[in-house]
Image (cartoon, rainbow, N blue to C red; front, side, top):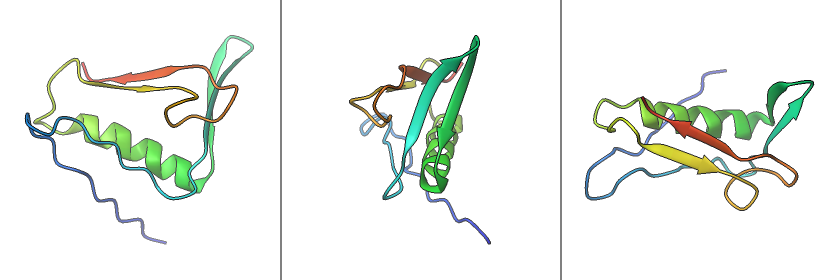
Length: 85
């Protein structure tokens, strides 16, 4: 199966844009001192989109996505920041 990923282009005017697959589920937790990111298929594709969006050459260093229970993550998840450096 091929997966085609369309990413929003970064511009100074529009900034970063998040694009999520319908039905996505992502949970982040710490178990035995390790961070565990678990997701359904749509969640894994969505997570990849966030990382690929940050990886664009035009995106400035320090740009980030802040993910938490009220923004993209499943209940009982810990917060997660994805940052370009």
